[in-house]
Length: 125
Image (cartoon, rainbow, N blue to C red; front, side, top):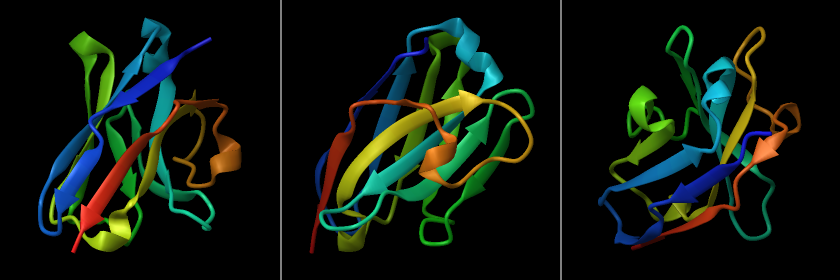
């Protein structure tokens, strides 16, 4: 069972940057798709970005395209979410997630079966 641990959240002013990290406990997660979702108070969990190790495929939500970048470090078994040009509406708890690679990169939370504990990102105006 893969375990995921996020880090890197915090408070930042609008226009600033943060980098979130997601460390996996098992090297077998190379056969997984990795995703980032976020959930703001009173809202449903929403897709942010997804990444596949095998073919280095990526997919982004329209709301973050051009501002966020998902990437991975093979040596560290870690996936990152670089967030630039942050906006107050990016404020949420960000969750790292994983699922075995098959077919397309999924964008709905129900398609993922392993989740981290979440890390808070707050963007002030």
